[in-house]
Image (cartoon, rainbow, N blue to C red; front, top):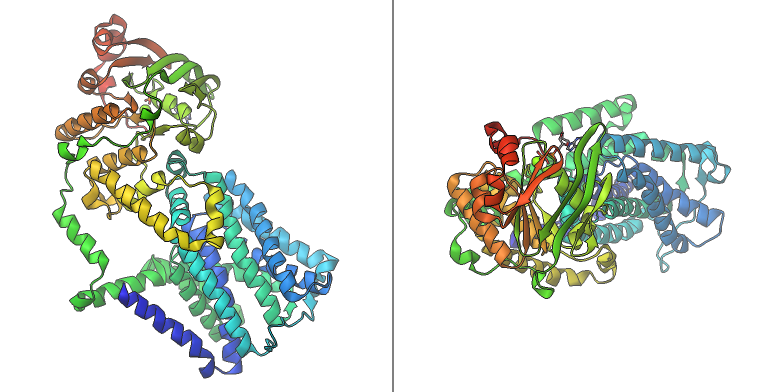
Length: 616
Ligand code: ADP
Ligand code: MG
């Protein structure tokens, strides 16, 4: 940590004295680098951290520059008066370009954002107020307390301070709740929504932040060059920006800044090779993706690790984490009774577990010609463990999916303690007190066990984001509090020792447990478990049964989809048997297993008892 501080301080000193060693051409390049650092950091936030394919960053850049030009030249605003408005203009464009992300993702989103960026370029070239193909020359030099900013050596320091502030702000955002939510929705947007993350809002926020960063860069670029023209903000620049972020290492902000510097300087070197420039970038990107998929940031990290190995005194935290891996029992669930003696947190005690925790009323769900559910009615009593069994394809998972907002019912309604949950978005259902696990594991794969849990523990609303701008110092205490609560929860699940591991590097049984811990972190009143015992060893299965009954004892109602009749018999208070999307019978476990219809359609069929391999 101290070594990192030293490196930061050293880097800062170099940046401060750098102009002294640069020619007038060199300082111009340095200024462009700083502008591209802002652009690349913004792109890294939306693309690398939030996983939203944004191919319109160059258009946002152009929006900032053109807004500044139009507002100063045509409207007559002073440069610094136009400055915040230019950022807002870019942010609004970001919001509009981000809207398709609510419907499409990945390469489809890339195509849509690219299309919108091209439309934006077309406007610049054709509209008369943007100067058409010629652009707008003769922009004012930004005034600055009597300091002459037409001198690029002076402009450098203005850019350095602003780029520095934006970089530090980006680091803060990406290392705390906002970044965690971005990462969660990038890793698995469905699981993020079920952990309470307002996925649509955060997708848009990612676009707006990236566009605002580009807006700052654009306005400062207009002040630097004093001329805007449409071909500055073309696809070539977009490709360069993309290369900067990929070469730098996608979700690493230092990497993005480094990538911006390296590629821009390289570009100047290749400047006399105009026609081969794009080919050269292409080759650099291909080489990076093949040789160093984690980019420059990854190279620096592994180089640093090698230095650390050679100099034991410099060893940092990551080495400690590896040591814990050796100590911890990573095989088996290892849920010890003492750790579980304290009940997992729940807020059900507030109202007391009475009434109907889950009331399913005539729910039908069609998928095209398939009727996955056909008029299902059932009731889960508060405080119970309610089993749901039935052959593969009988509609069990679909029932959970409708209860938790994966999709709406074709008809019918599901309520929980009187509140309608069906037909609501997943994050709302989570806040109404329903949490779930998935038939196929859905952990946030790039995150540690602790971070997985922290996503669900964090109940702050999107509106609280103003703090990043107006009260950034409050995040330290908030993060410490969240970490403390996460560690406490993990302690109850005997996962404390492996809190720093990447969740997806754990053995299967423990991943299941992490998923249950994450579900409990959102403090549900009702927990829906979709085949939690599938794939567990018999020892793990025993631990799981204890865990589930303790969760129930803490006041949380449990609905449990399970194939293993032994587990169902010993755990469940009541059981609903589904067959072909209909309720076959409901009753106590012993009633159900004696029912002739059940024996015929389900229990008699040995194959039906095998775990269902289809995903959630
Ligand atoms: P179970 O969990 O009991 O094995 P599911 O609820 O997964 O059953 O599936 C019930 C039926 O609905 C199956 O025929 C399945 O193919 C169909 N089904 C489930 N989800 C979808 C979907 N998203 N699209 C189309 N069909 C689906
Ligand atoms: Mg299923």
